[in-house]
Length: 233
Image 1 (cartoon, rainbow, N blue to C red):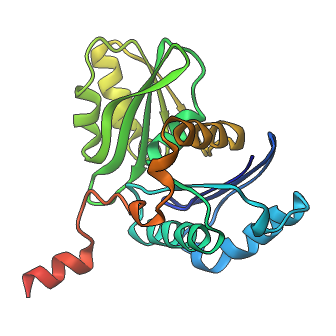
Image 2 (image 1 turned 180 degrees about the horizontal axis):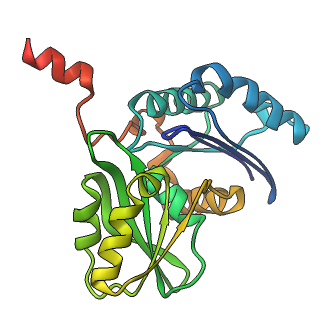
């Protein structure tokens, strides 16, 4: 099966192409220019695999939470391809995309957090149990302190995402107080094989769930600044 995965919910523009198991991927800090660069990079990765978009059988997309604009770009693009090509579309929480690529051992708990401004992060906490990624704290809009305090009996913590980088001093302080061994992976980006495998796994669990592209919608956990301003008027 040929699988395409798109995630632009953070500054990282991530594209993965799995052609019957052979992986091609693109991952780069694009800032806020996803709308300018994504189609060019998508064309490039398809060219690397010597295929066209018509050869894709399944699409996965990061639905957030994360950058409002980034999420909209990825989801609208994935929905468009799903509709035109009449192929299934699997929505994945963006934190899950990152966490699935970071699993190294079952003793580690994974904190995937993206900078959400306003002293908060869009974060989720995961753990690998029998090679299955388990959601411990649902992705949402949190203070990093609340995320750290939400997990009991925590020994080892693997931190990924620019939200962890921004608040690494807080993580370091709380880890010391709680006697947690933490590790921060700077400039972390998803792994094409891990994310393609996750997309296929979700699809195989319930194929009928992903036939209608209209069911894949952005996962926002906070109103945008524009919505807040509108409500104040």
